[in-house]
Amino acid sequence: MTAQNRAVNEDELWWQTLADGPLLLALFDAGECLRQANASYRQAWGLAADSSPGWLEMVEAAQRAGVGPVDVPERRGRMVQRGYEQAWRDGRRLWWVEQRTPEGGLALTGVDISALAGPRPLTGQLLSAQAGRELLQALLADPRAWPLSVATLAPEADPAELLARTRGEDGCMRLDDGRLLVMLPSTGPAQAAALGERLGALTLTEAIWGESAAALIVRA
Image (cartoon, rainbow, N blue to C red; front, side, top):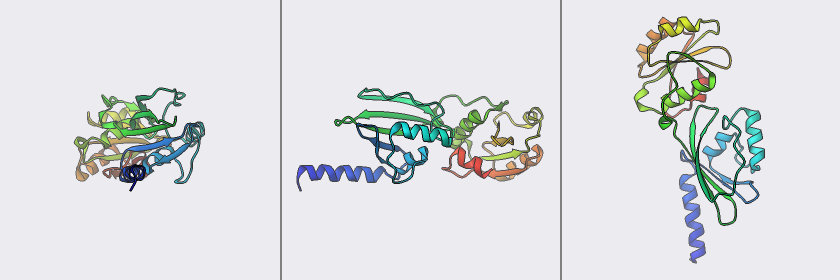
C-alpha cells in the first residue's frame, strides 16, 4: 500500500468514525459548495442526504424553512481558522470552528454547548418563543434538570396567574401556536402530574434523553 493510499484510507476511516456522532461536520470546496457533511450537520440545516448546495443557497433555504441560525450568518472571510458561538432557532447554542483547507475550501466542526452557554434565561417571567427554546434546550442538556417534563396550557390562560403558581426553578414560554408551556425540571412523573393538575394543564409530556427542544415542543 502506498503512502497516498494509506492517507486516503485513514481519511475515510476518520470520516466514517465521526459520521454518525453528535458533532456537526461539513466540508465545502473553494467555490463554497457543500462536498461532504454528516447526518447531524444535514439535519441541522434541513438538507437532503444527497444535496450539495452552495453556502448562500443553504442560508436562504434555511431562512425560508425556519431552521438554522437565529441571525443571518456573516459573509465568510479568508481567515485560515476561526471559532465562534451561534444561537440556533431550535434553541441550541453551537460552537463552530472553521478551517481553510490547502485547496481553498472550508472544513467546519460544530458542537452543542447549550449546557455551557452561560446563565440560563430568567425564570419567573413569560419568555418569548426563542428565549423559551434556549432555556428548554439548556435544561435538556443539563443532567441536573432530570427527570424533566413540560406542561401546556390553553392560549387564553392568564400568564400572571400561571407564574404565581409555578416554582422558582420552572420556566414558562408562549409557543408559536399561542399555548403556554411550563418546564418542570428535576420533577418525577408523579410530582409532574400533581403540578400539572394544579396548573390546569391540557397536556403533560415527559422528556426523552437526547431529544432536542424543538422535538419535545412538537410532542407537547
